[in-house]
Image 1 (cartoon, rainbow, N blue to C red):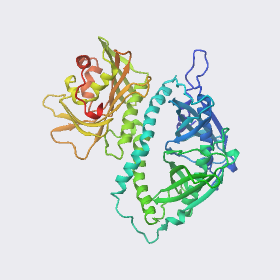
Image 2 (cartoon, helix red, strand yellow):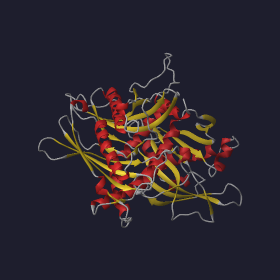
Image 3 (cartoon, rainbow, N blue to C red):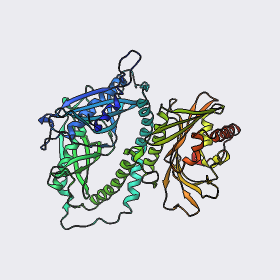
Image 4 (cartoon, one colour):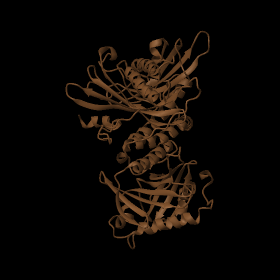
Length: 576
């Protein structure tokens, strides 16, 4: 197995042995293995992405139904980025398991790997997250049982699933706002003499939904609809470049309504815009039976590339959009490309690959907030912390991984968890208990969950400059009783707040609080900090055991919380 193939173990945790001596396996896990035959492949001898989508959807649906105990349907699929193509004769392995269940929906994680039987190599093809909804039974609406995470990896996915769900729920609204604000600033479309008219790329096709296309509840498989959509999108992309395109990404999409056996599915596709090395194709699926009006089933945006003989993306011809709607789609595709890059850059990167301070603006706020909270949740699920010191029930832990030092301080207070969250959420009050916070001001109240602060800290050396930090604070209340309150902090950059000569600009990669309700009056709260060079001088003596200033700081925090446990404080209005 190559290093690329190690991701295949993510879903299995094969090293975890239960007390019975058996290897632990998630009870919702479903695996599918398929050898790619010529009938599954396109003209290039590569597995059709449409066929892969059908296999992925079937595997994920079986996992969802195993957990729910009833029929389930696909509600949405998050962004999918296909890292590699799969050839005839190679083996596709798909592993799906339920990460978390909510009231009537659940998130299913899907991992696709490929195996070359002759070289014994394995590599990751893609990873996806799909949302499935349980169907009503004769007894009424199904109340899904909770997923109980058993391993550290399952706990991590369980925790992150709540944040991904939050992003899905606001995704459509955020994208609409960003598109309307971004396209207004783009100006007119550029004209090229050799441009290909977008009308040339328009494709329409109709499919009759037959029993093989549907599940046992006569609903059309979501994967089958995606496969039909991929087919017309590929035709549209081919018409632009007169070549064989490769699908690279599918943006997050939602199924707007069900389709059933007997439906006529009308599929339409057109190239919205062509960039230097990629093109965006918009696809729409509508259904009807008899003389009824068309029902909107789904819309999706797919990004294609055209690889040359060296598998490098070819330069694409320019596109001439149609007047009015064509120009609108052309501009929206430019805005979506930026959003797509932000999403891939901020969310898909490993934490160590994301720069310390990412530029903040409204177009990437949702993704920075997600990354901020997710990084803290990942730190919270680690189970290999080392207890460095303890004083009067204030515990200091450290963890060194990938040449990075992480610090964790844990303690209990006799204050309700909601009030602890309320008091710690406003960083302006932190100087009341933390001597490292000299000044703190709100720069921007982005929304009720995200606030931008400028924090000033004193110099650690006599006569040296103080430091200032531009911090994004992201707050989250629990999704249910198995979640903590969260206050996540990370550095960002703002054009209107550049570094100044008076201060050294410090950076925070990941820090914040998790707040757990132990009882109605007792709370466990934990502070985390992934130490950067700008933060390390403030904590190095504690980590080395040369001082116990951490104890003084968090004892002061405890006293602050106790003194204000009945106070509403002075949080910004959006914090309530």
